[in-house]
Length: 429
Ligand code: ACO
Image (cartoon, rainbow, N blue to C red; front, side, top):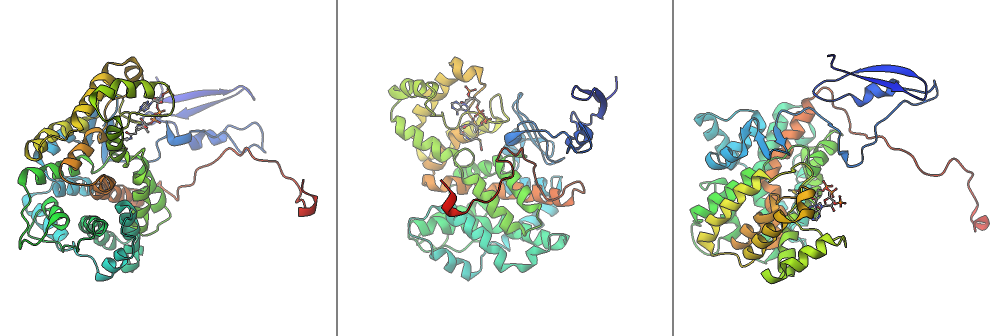
């Protein structure tokens, strides 16, 4: 059997043979299908990119039906068990797990770039006392581009690597400053002797003690959450990163745009929305009533459920559920957990959710963990943006090195008025 697709255009009776590679046909191959010389050629129409591959990528693989997630071929469950965030970041960026020497050098390199310019602090002080930390975060990341003009050299490998290290190292510092700003506490400088997650907790929660020591179980839990959130192929924010980056703007500006995409309640804002939903439900006894409302079609959604790609249990949600038990053994159980468990129990048996293949996603339980660890809900999308930074950069780098990529520029189907003459104001009805 030939790896081709035969198409008969019934408007003209002409037959076309299109090659199939990797289970796809090239949309540009359709352009030759025309009704006449004036015809632009056939296009595809795919709102929200439901069935369109926009790139070839070797970074992350998802099988949504089987609930499989691999970073560079390694199952997420194994990385969550054995790796740490910086090692996983190395893997995502460079394609292979580092040797011991490489990991030591990489960890040291990151720790040497954790500080931000003092003017960044001043910039952040300008935000309102009650500014949402994610708004502060994405604005400040964008502002970094003004501090590093060399970031514009996006075709220079060394310059790209420099910004990569800076971004991975500085996002926890910016995130922590955004948090401290929102609660009116002085900023805590990074402590480079601590681990990536340990230093982040230090910058968030250090008070008057000389040396901050985070709880090892909580530090590890945060690191696992960072691993789980590090990349997820062509999701909304990553596509934003690639799209913005395709104009060859500097990575700080592109990453600010990606973070903005992550801010939305249908994406990185979902765990914040889960907690609001659980609070709104209030008690286990009110769960059936809430499920009824979701099914009534009044627009309410069971937040933390459903996924564009996963049509089975999100593998990250499984790891998170185990991590939650460890965290609650230290912090005490989050009182909202019982409501969440009851929601999950009912939804997994209910025909509405079963028939639509709606399962808990990564955000269903992550908010409960973050809340138990003392984070306010406004910090949740920021906690997502820190580890996703490496995914965004790895995908940006891959996009820049892909000779097939150009500036992203979708087509449209124009449905507006046909040409018409300008009407002077006095003649308009
Ligand atoms: N609660 C109730 N019904 C839902 C939900 C949900 N959480 N998610 C989807 N549905 C229903 C839709 O109403 C639709 O039903 P219909 O066929 O009767 O119209 C059907 O399931 C398909 O839903 P779509 O919106 O077409 O699915 P899509 O792939 O576009 O949406 C999304 C995916 C945005 C994640 C959606 O499931 C959702 O809104 N979930 C809640 C928000 C959330 O948890 N987001 C986090 C995603 S993970 C992440 O970004 C890290």
